[in-house]
Length: 118
Image 1: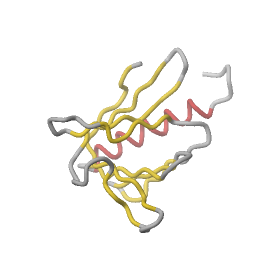
Image 2: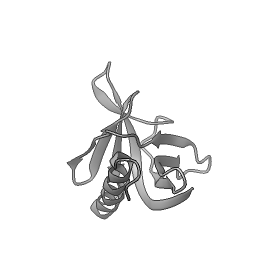
Image 3: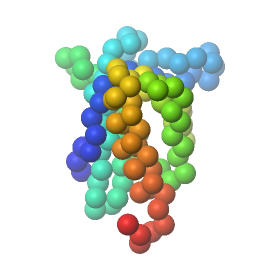
Image 4: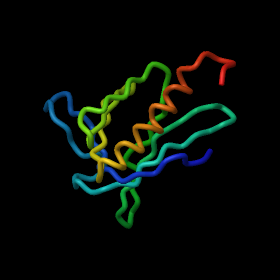
């Protein structure tokens, strides 16, 4: 498994009860290193994020699954839903957001491709 993309963003989770976005992990709105990992043998992808702080807390480890929709809500805030929750990434720059979106769309295309193609 190897990293195919790395950006900086704040990881957010949508709180259905409060109807608002909350930071993942510790309560601070601090940046994390977000990476998309690809396992070429299984053709699987996952989004992993670790806080840039000393403890490097893992704040997201989300497999990309067939049928997942990726929404670029604004140029610097993107979101998607997994079976349990809605994830959001608040990027440090529009360039990071565009880079991540490009790799995310490529990964979802691969995950959604019929078996035996690609």
